[in-house]
Image (cartoon, rainbow, N blue to C red; front, side):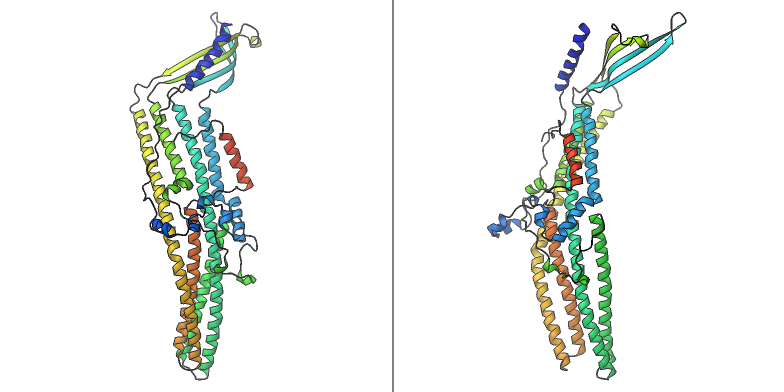
Length: 502
């Protein structure tokens, strides 16, 4: 009766002592953002902006399905989210971090094992004695009075949450990379179309120049100049074909599988290819730097790593204090294996152990110093993440503000060059202008048309970059395979998985 009452009381006392354990994790205070209060030129822009623009949704609240309107691009993004290996690695990193967190969380509870042992030793009268034991045992369970195990669990939890934010960062980057690669392929197709038209025009010019030269109307100089321009167009066409193939290969790698027929438009297949006809993307306003702290997953990832570093300091501090462990066993013992289940063989053991650090050659001090330096490194990385995010948004805003004007001016220049080429051709046909003037107008028109396509590509890609820099692109349902993995991870970590105190 006494034994049956004592064992439950010991377990209750153990639980009470465990709950009374203290934490030595330093109080966390979010470092101040080492950036300006507003983006360069943003304050003045918001004052003069119409109310409709200011009421536009923030980028982080706009799912990529709403931001992109092009059906082909949406299909490519969906395939990349399902098949891209970098995103798959990011999801598996979450699984690994979750398993590490579960290991640390399990350290807070005793591990109960079933034990069956047998021993045989020489007896007092020259014979041999046997002893058999069977029962349950808890070996070296640490009573976490000073929060060492709890601190390690909090560090593992922060790392787990950081891996989830890392997955979101990878997804945002993947969506932006697929969109930019798709736009590059469209630009390549449009440039190829322009070059094919230029080639046809220059081949006709070479034919006419050859005819005039053979009839003695013009000199060989005019013919060689026309031939030179034709070969220059051939060079440009070969370069653009190579770039088109490279961009398609890059897009295939991002998607993670071979592209299905019809996923990319092609002028050779009779499809109209022009960036000017690309479905417009939703315009999103820029937020303030304080908004970046909420919307950018990479900044939240850096903050979770900073919280993990704080928790490691708590574990390092707890190492200076006594470590109390408990070994408990309960079962039956007998000299005969067949008598283990008989009455009267029941017994239990209780073996507490107190380990007090006295001399460790500075190991604990070095461990605490290392944890503090790790915290300082995490602070610097967190501040650098904010500065990087601020610079990316500022660059995207500056690019968006100037590319619109540049594109308009470039289009006007291309229109002027087209009129110039038409007039130069008329003047040459009527003998007023030289053939050199006609070839120069033809060359300038080709360069101006290429510049328009390249500037329009830069403008569209800058919209994608701004959307990415503002933290948009991850608020949507994952593909079925990834969603199942993520749901299992969250459900497994849910019990007791409270975030560290902010």
